[in-house]
Length: 120
Image (cartoon, rainbow, N blue to C red; front, top):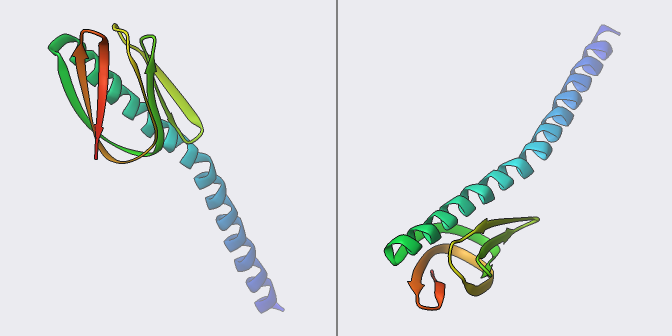
């Protein structure tokens, strides 16, 4: 009888720890994904701002099935279920859909505004 009780206790503890682990990972993975997208957007908007000052700027980011666009001075990065935006000081008009790579983003300041070239 004691062995059955011990077995049930071990089984219940194992089941509880497994369920707890799934809850923690299920809740933290979307937060990590959102944090990564936010950091990428900060790098991209920083490079765009630097291009406005210096004429060009380059940043390397890893993108996975992302959409990177700019219209009327607003840069947008959509990745997964999140979309982040950042204001630029100059007009822009570009759009890249389904970008998946270790990408080199080259921002350039031209007479028409901010342009982007994606390499990688």
